[in-house]
Image (cartoon, rainbow, N blue to C red; front, side):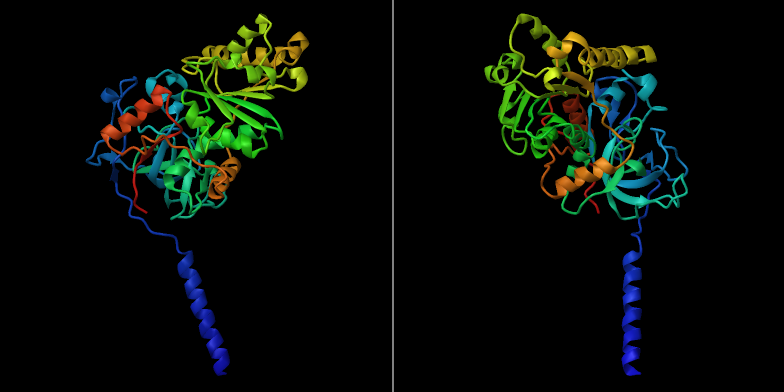
Length: 406
């Protein structure tokens, strides 16, 4: 009798403890918040970008306010860190306003973040329960267009979020959520033993792609960027690197003697340069399509593009890519040019993000953040961050710390 009573008491205690553990964290969500405010299109951040310190911006309300990027299945996070990308600068410039412009001004910029979940929907649009719980720390990338994240609170899309491992910092998670994920996806195309050349190796995607190329079995990884010494140091660890302002990559003798299996152009302009060198009778630095050589890119020839209509879009992206993809696979060009592929690498699911965060947790992939940051969440800090991103010379990802509160 006594023994059974003790068992019942123990079971009751265990039930109470499990119930306590299962209770989600509780957060007081203020009606107003601090958030970066962009008041119009332009490139002078001193004039159009600020962070009001008095907390006068309305906190987005889950189930009531629509996200500025017009996605569904949203949840609310308390933002800890935000990472910038080329798209953040492009949206602010107005060069793609017809497709990526905000619904109104002022708007909150920023598309990639890490934060604490403070409110979740009772169910998703499909009728399923939300897979996240209040209190989870998540990495959240932009959906549709990059905006809405650079504030103390933000709505994010549950489909492209994942829980951040405990040993990955919030700043690292924000840096990894888009650019490193793109690197992980592109690296899946690299074969065991490939020799790989990466243009733009020092940027947000490139710094992580160099690591992933090696992890996926590349026998030799070379980088093109403005700081070749950094590219050959850990964690990027290229076997060799050149400064494109001082050395023509197509003139490197070792690369001509032993051409690459894969060229990955993250900076733009490598394909026209490849065509210019072809008629000169020099050995190519990349194998032809006939010899299974590949050319992968994520950007048009000019990465600073302007799109105001579907015709602009087709001229910039569709027509050149189709022409090059076809000509490099059919006919005489197969014997002299690598197989051209334009890589669209942002899926609307979280599987690749899960892989990316797991690699970071296992210390197989190191987040690369520009040493000038993380920047402070102030007028000066946010403006400096955007100026660095716009310069196209950031050494890795540009990150802003919004909050250190748990």
